[in-house]
Length: 93
Length: 210
Image (cartoon, rainbow over the protein chains, first blue to last red):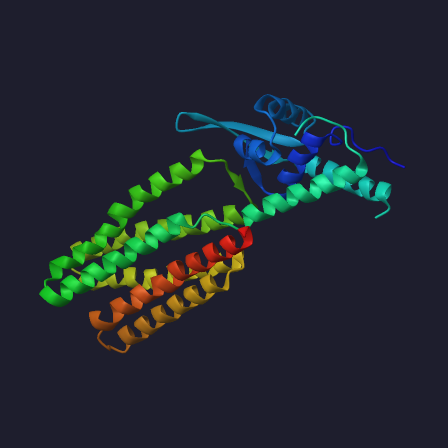
C-alpha cells in the first residue's frame, strides 16, 4: 500500500489544505480562526506547505495592517487528491 | 489544533469537518453593501417622487445624484471594514465581485455620458440611466441569484428586467413615462431585487444557525 504523504499527514497542515481545497483563497486570520491554532504554529506550518509548493502565500497590506493570503497550488491540489485516494485505500472505502 | 500525527480515520474526519465549516461560510454571503445601495436608491427615488409630485419643480431631478455622491464613499468605507475582518473567498465570490464591479463601471460611464448629452441639449438621454437601473442592475441581481442558488434574487432580477422592457416599449410607443407609475415600479424593483432576497437569506442563515 502507498505511504501517506508525510507533509499532509499532520493535523494542522491537513486542516489548512482541506480549507484551501474548498475555497479559492483565505487569509491568515481566517485560517487561524478555523483551525484554532496559535499564530506561531500556523505560520510555521504554512511555511512548510509553501516550501513544498503546495500553497502560495501572498503578503500585502490592507490600510496599515499586513495581510497574508494563501491559495492552494496545482501541485498542492494533486498531492491532496492523492492523499485522499490513499486514505480511501487504507480505510477500504 | 497542533502539529500531531493522525490515524487515517482521524484524517478523514478532519477533512470532512473542515469542508463542513467552510461550507457554512460559503452559504452566508455578505449582503450589506448591496442592501446599502438598494436602500439609498429607494430613499432617493421616493424623495424625488414626493418632491416632484408636490412641487413640479424639475430641479428636484438633481436629487438622483445623491445615489453616487453618498453611495460611492459609503461603498468604499464598508468594503474597507469588511476587509479588516478575516477573509475567505471562493471562486463564486470572485465572480460576484467582478459582476458587480462591471455593473458599477457601466453606471459611472453612463452617468458621464448622460451629463455630456444633457450639456449638449439632449436632456432625454438621461432616460438611459432608467433603462440601466432596470435592465443591467436586474441582470446583475438575477445572475447573483443563480450563483448563490437563491431564487428570490432571480425572481427580483427578472421582475426588474421585465419592468425595464415595459418602460422601453412605452417610450418607443410614445406612451408618457409618468412619475406616478415609473417611480413606484422602480422602487418595487429594487425592493424585490435586493431587500426581499437579503431578508430571505438572513432568515435562512438564522434558521441554519439554530
